[in-house]
Image 1 (cartoon, rainbow, N blue to C red):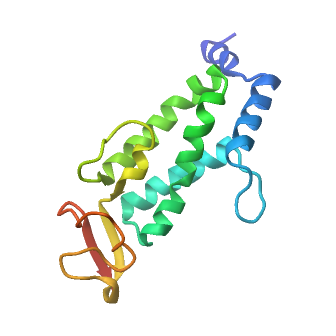
Image 2 (spheres, rainbow, N blue to C red; image 1 turned 135 degrees about the vertical axis):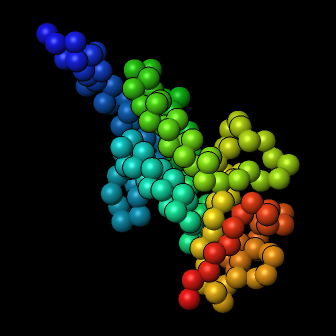
Length: 160
């Protein structure tokens, strides 16, 4: 057996592992809009896409942002229920996506940057809005509900 084959065999999941993953994700996530069942892979994929969108410049409002990061909350809730082997296999991927998200966002002033729900206490570093939605020196339309003034590190870029 080649070393890579041996490594891959050590990563193979049992049917019990798959059942436990399915049970954990179903318990916290249920189904996506449209009725498709959430899976661990779909939660990771959504979190990865969210990190990419935030890196490029987030173009939706604050309530949509809260909705979009729901996938990370579901991952956090499911994580303790996942088999240890699954956690070990997926941890580097989750850490990588989390790091991308952290770099593309800024923490809420006066809030802890770590701990439970840390991703909910961050805002995109770059907000893309229509020109009519931008307000000089303040949050753009759709973000004015934030409980603090817009940090200087949050860039608001408008398009026509």
